[in-house]
Length: 351
Image 1 (cartoon, one colour):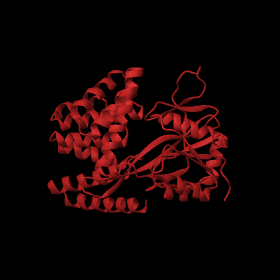
Image 2: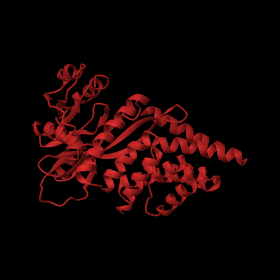
Image 3: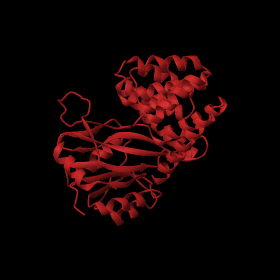
Image 4: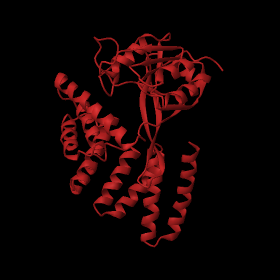
């Protein structure tokens, strides 16, 4: 297989549960693998040495960007692909990948991650995120100590919206399917770093969003509402992915504290500006919470037709559609969507 002129850069700490499978899947593609260990006390470093071209040590300073930039600085290639240990590559179109590097030399590449999650039914499903993960280190670097972001490497250049192409590769992310205690510890660590950043840099829309996200996961709904509302007050463009996620998170927090009508008003306020499948799915759920099943049904059907709908949104939408059609006595329509639901489950299982 042709060697891809890219260095895969991974930072790790106590990741023996995931790192071997992550690295094994990368080896066939001929990319340089650079692992930076930030203080593991398990077998992470030992496992990494079996597969990686370089295994480096970096003293943890509560700063993910610093660790990522150190790892990239020690890579042999200018093009850097960032992965985490709990992300497993399932396929790369090598020729298309190399063509992208030549065609977009000063752009970043977005990796479409399939996030493994457990649905309310207990079954597995996938949500999808496009995250900038491929960049040329001559032009970009990481900033922010937690939830790090790619920014222009030239300190004199104004921050700009990243021009991204979609990387022709598939990967599955296992980090959202953590045991409750492990997830709690992760979010509490993030909050500690985020509040330290807040004290040093002051409030920003993105920082308030990330604090709100962690508080929501920890079920601190009132705190989440405070930071989501602060974040939205900055009036950032609604087409930014994190802004839409912030609106959805605020709606969910409103519902959890009994403010269902506020949640619906919020979703409807931004509906025309937020046209993703994920947003439509959240909107349908809020309509159900407000006892408007017919309007919700229309939204759920819309979700299943949108090209950006992940299996998580599709599977749950089909379930609601089937249940609602049964309630209304529309059994033929219910059977039609039962077939669509079965096809969706087959695609999920393929992944």
